[in-house]
Length: 506
Image (cartoon, rainbow, N blue to C red):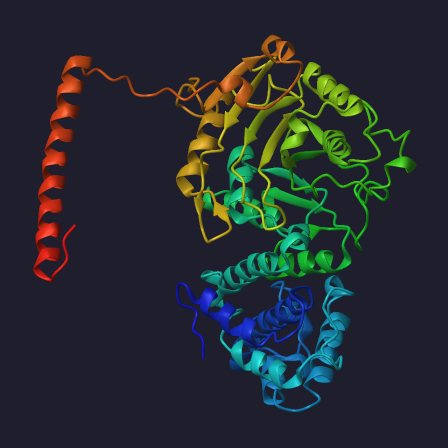
């Protein structure tokens, strides 16, 4: 049995992945994450059930006792002890489907969310039983919750599924280090947090974690999101439920452009990773949309539609941080270039960060982060009107495995630290650093024809000045070379003698 020690996520994954067989990662994802969710709600319920059973004045079958503590009510036939006892039966698939249906029936917030395809013929029931045995460690009791056991497993599995799915994986998962950087930069302490394409909800998890780490109150954040893909929307709902995050993700999945579920929302913080360069976003049906205040985005690319949707959702002093493909910084397509110019002239663009390639599972291309704000005067302690901060972070990151990079904690602190210094929310005074960061005026950006690529502004990295006089350096280098040539000649003579000793001469 796997125990929840540090590093157990990887071991658990390798064991679970062997059980996948020929099933697609996208299908297996729902099988495994659904079981993890079932285990979590059952653990939480059974711990409370046992506590109430020990209390002579309490009724362990009183549903209200659980609802009062935000614990999902789990009927008898959905409890893990029952599932595990039946794991080796051929009808285990039907038993789990029935468990999911029973939990949804008893808990309104989970209605239509849980996966119910365990009885389908192509799912190997022997492997399913083995997977149930594999997950028979505690994830929902108090001790496990304090260590965030399920959160860690869930997040790790999401990243591994994104990797296994390749290009499609980016639709539901933004790499952990990229989310952390966005959150560290805009610091969502208090207010409304919105993600118009929330995937599996990683931005919200990090926002809540940020508040916890900085000793804030989780109740000070209100979470709003929307997701188009129905399976991913369900993943997000489960992800929020296991974290105890009260998130308004709408009553269903929906297309943000064509069916905005949060029409009147004005958010204090917006975090997003819109799908890159989407061409089939239905832009031809939205030519007269009210959101296009800075120009009508092209039908063939949704990037600037996402930017303007995000701007339309910002509160008067709100800040948005989001991921886009690098082409968004310099595209010369007439419609996009005009929108970018208008955004800059309206002084909405606050900061642009270029990141290294290979950070995303869905694409090897390098990406950038955009930061927008409605009011540079009030949003921070330093007046920043008609000024844009450019950060070239392409040299950051490390290879986490053979194909993917991650940003280190030091990278995240370095990039976010510069941003906070420039904003005036950090005690460290801001300074331009050649090759890394530059605070450019609006006039400088105009002179570059509104292109926002940081490399144009930050200049070249300064090299350390060499104070050694030329003559001394040449004397030192030639002396080293002479010494190495003598050693080389000595080694060559030894090799010749050795060969001669066995009857060969060269």
